[in-house]
Each structure stands twice: as C-alpha cells, then as structure tokens.
Length: 176
Image (cartoon, rainbow, N blue to C red; front, side, top):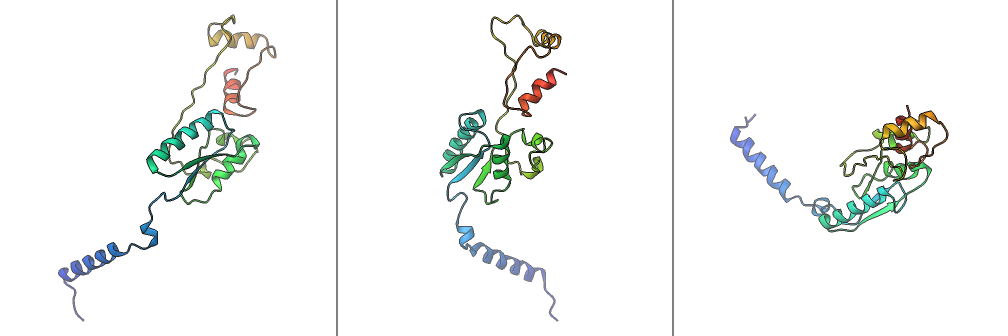
C-alpha cells in the first residue's frame, strides 16, 4: 500500500478546493435577495409599529435594491400578526416586527407563542413611555398624580393600547 506524503495531501486538497470554486450551480449563482421582501406588521396601518416598519422597509429597499413591502396582519390583540411571523416560511423573504406584547400573550392565554417562537435578527426601535396630563391639570409631578389617583379610586381615566398591553401594564404597575 502506497503511503501518502504531505505533498500528495496538499495537492489533493488544492484540487478539491479548485473544484469547489468551479461549482457555481443555480443556488450559488443567485444572491439574496433576488425578489421582494415582506415585513409583517402585527398592528394596524398608521400606528407606531406600522410607521417604524415602513421606515425600516424604505431603508432596506435602498440598501438591498429590491422592493420591501409592509403587510399589516391585525387582530386578536396582535396574535394574528405575531402568528403569521412565527409560521412564515423561513426563506429569508418574510420577516416581521414583533413587539413586547409577545411576552404577555402567552400568559393571557391568547396563544402558545412565546419569545422563543422567533429568531431575533435586529432591534431597531425602542418606545419610551411617557405620562401626560392637560396643561391646566393640578398636578406637576407623577407622584402628585399617583397620590390623587390612590386617594380617589375609580375617579380618573387613562388610555393606552389595549387591555393587557404594555401600556396597560405600565399604568397598573405605577398604581401598585
């Protein structure tokens, strides 16, 4: 039996490398992306998540050179759109904008989806919360407002994105 020398191994490895470089089959000849990309937005057109998704789509179009379309999939307190993202074909042409509500939907019994149902690729937006009152309101600080609310339960109203949503939980948390 012939013993292979280091020179034989290097020549064989070089030949294999050369053959691999020549293999430019159909899959390798195409670059990503070669067709439009879709961004699924789980919230309604005109809202904050939709607006940021459209900004992202515009920037991606400039960078990638293909159309990037935002598709709003609304309903079920965000479950419809988040489900569409989680079950989309993992082909690189459908991505989504998931929101913080995904960590609450499961615990509310709305879906089996959790944050583990997704593969994060980027964080592109942060939504800081704010507390506002009318300019002629008698409170000058959050502490003053919260004290008034605690003194008169049921007298005041607040608004947010929906029952069980992040802003509802923020308000409930402030009142604890």
